[in-house]
Amino acid sequence: MIALGGWAFRVEPAQVDENPLPGEDPLVYVLRLAQSKARAVAVRSLAEDVILAADTTVVDGGEILGKPSDRFEAETMLRRLCGRQHQVFTALAVVRLSDNSLVTDWCVTDVPMRAYSDGEMQAYIATGDPLDKAGAYAIQHPGFKPVSELQGCFANVMGLPLCHVVRALEKLGIHTDENIPRLCQEELQYDCSFFRLVQRGEF
Image (tube, rainbow, N blue to C red; front, top):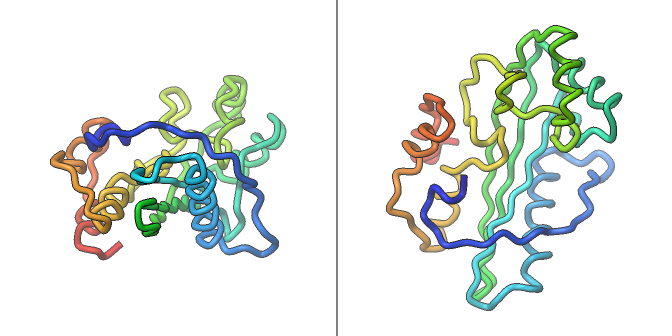
């Protein structure tokens, strides 16, 4: 998705402890991890680099749902979310190393899960796809299609809200000539009006 902006970039893995702190608020959690990832990459980056780090988590009833440890936990999460609405939080941290500037941003999307059948759920779990996904699902999975009638940012649920990325980078003077809302909608095949709220600074 980041390639849609036309920026030159490279991908650097960041190894950080992703366990929530006791009683940690979901937004505080994703902001902390995004900044931790940025700092972890900064120590091996060049002085002229700008680092973009992100963290996404699924939240149900205020509880953070991480990646399931096995198929049993994946089933437990999917049963819990079935036919109900939860939230997805993503935080961004952008660090410009030349002057150590830091910009953060975040996006929250309400996610209504459809009432998928037990057979659909078991078939999806058998693919192994849920095991490396927060909340045990991928919104973009072509077979399972777990979400119905989403109104907010689809890209956020996938893990990178591009309009927020643009907004954060622009605060550091980094711009793109690309029409990100149009390109994002074309890429995801999703009709989105949410981007206008982001552009107006209302979300």
